[in-house]
Image 1 (tube, one colour):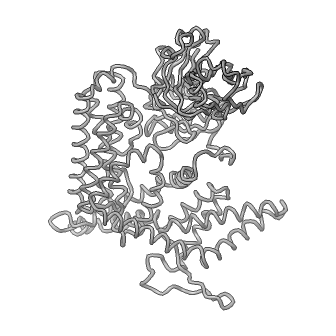
Image 2 (cartoon, rainbow, N blue to C red; image 1 turned 45 degrees about the horizontal axis):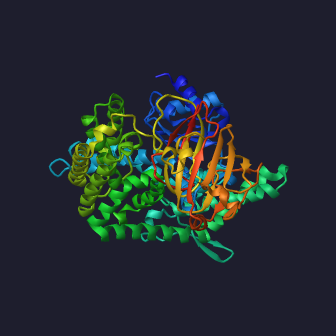
Image 3 (cartoon, rainbow, N blue to C red; image 1 turned 135 degrees about the vertical axis):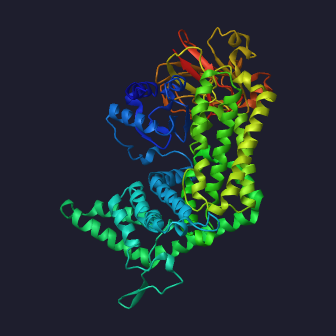
Amino acid sequence: MDYAKIAGLVIQYVGGKENIRSVAHCATRLRFQLRDNGLRNEEAISDIEGVKGVFLTQSQFQIIFGSGTVNLVCAEVQKQLGVMEEKPEDKNEEKGNPVQRFIKMLSDIFVPIIPAIVAGGLLMGLNNLLTSPLIHGQAVIALFPQWQGLATAINTFANAPFVFLPVLIGFSATKKFGGNPFLGAAMGMIMVHPDLLNAYQIGIADPPMWNIFGFQIAAIGYQGTVLPVLAVSWILANIEKRLRRVTPSWLDNLTTPLLSILVTSFLTFIFVGPVLREAGNLLAAGITWLYNTLGPVGGALFGFAYAPITMTGMHHSFIAIETQLLADSVHTGGSFIFSTASMNNVAQGAAVLAVLLMTKNDKIKSICSASGISALLGITEPAMFGVTLKLKYPFYAAMAGSAVGSAYLAATKTLAQALGAAGLPGFISMKPDHYMNFAIGIILSMGVSFALTIVFWKKVGLEKQDSTKAAPVSGLPAPETPDTQTAVLYAPMKGEMIPVERSEDEVFASKALGDGVAINPEDGMVYAPCDGTVTLLFPTRHAVGIRTESGVEVLIHIGINTVQLDGQGFEAYVAQGDTVKQGDQLILADLDLIREKGLNPQTMMILPEGAGLRIRRSADSQVDKDTRAVAVYK
């Protein structure tokens, strides 16, 4: 595989170097922040060697390569761009609602430290194999005492990431919050200093006390905690940033770190730490109680919803909760999140293997063979975005399989004791006496998913869908030839969208004025379908023209024969020459008035100068201003 060639094609088809704001990667996906998402060519990217799928989420364009390949492609892309890491986001460019931004924040903090936590979890699994009574009621170290030292060493290695978890989170979180990550790591070290009472000894031993001017402060550590160190990192970063703004440069390096650590440390042990430690314990206890109370029903619901949750990226927020559950496993029993994720992953893998068995499409076969195994081993993005979501019904089958397996695990209270690869390798993260239940859960998930996929394949006729190139996630069908995408137009109104040839206006339907779409509107507000300049606004305000940044002319004609109203019932929010952004309000039309006058409010969006241009329409029928309606190609 020529990674330099692949990287060059990726850069070209996402709009060129000038269109790339930043690039990074996770376990399977290359993640781009683009200046203009409309310039990307998803079809061309999908045809690049190694690409298993593409999708756009929360303004971030992601290309799925799979584990092992994505890091090599990303390194080559960064080499060609001269960019070695993702740039901090400009606050003015943050997108998404508060929940989405919070989830992204947790993702940015925890994703970099997952390898360390997973390594500790897998080592803990190895220790369980050595110390659990698996052989006629005896442990391996009892049968072979010479292995005792090995088990002790592995146990130490396994515990380290959890004991020093505040150091890992402190570094990552402080960096995310805009502070010095090494100060964050230092703060994490303070929180687990050996002079403090170990957090796992609370209630067993009395903590040492600091007497500071008559004020008693309990010296208790924060091993294995999550919420306290997140809050402390935010406080530290903000204190540091404010101090740097007011401290003279010649004094900055001396006093800013000193005061930041000193003030944050006292706030940590006096107030922030104790309050949030208790909050974390209550959160873990509450989630455990809820899961145990709902039982199989709760397990089934969580298992059924896990794949859609993964699509939104919300599953990254589970990392903080799962870490807390595992750190307090003495009271919580372990993590049900890992168990559910394992059921979801093997269900997705089984659905893909069913598609592999049934399909006759060579390209889908090649994607299935790699992504199916990858999903069974714990990486589902290639399977989901490359196969099951595109064919839709295998995705539903996998959701059902995940629900059945998760319900069984909830009924048998099968919980993970460590993080690891959520899938077939998940056994190592379970207690040995839970291996059988975990295996039954996997068989149920895979069996239901595999069987339902085959049923859907035969009943719904998926073999016909797979005979043509599957549509990208955006919902726009693939073009017949690999043309260059020049613009993406969003729906200008809310309502039912149809091809312009089905318009009730014979002139527009003949395409004599240009190709495009017609919308039967439900609401009278007309929005800009793209970024561009208003080149035309009729005096009657029933039509408006926009030139996109790439030079494509777009005409929006509101209603049929509405020129007769002479502007009555139309209110314009823009003027000729104005610059607009996609989604900006252009014109408000009084649909009731149009109908009262005996006219049809059907609205057309066409390319009046479309010579040499080709379009492909979205398959969506119900649209609004956030729906991609038309892609324009040269």
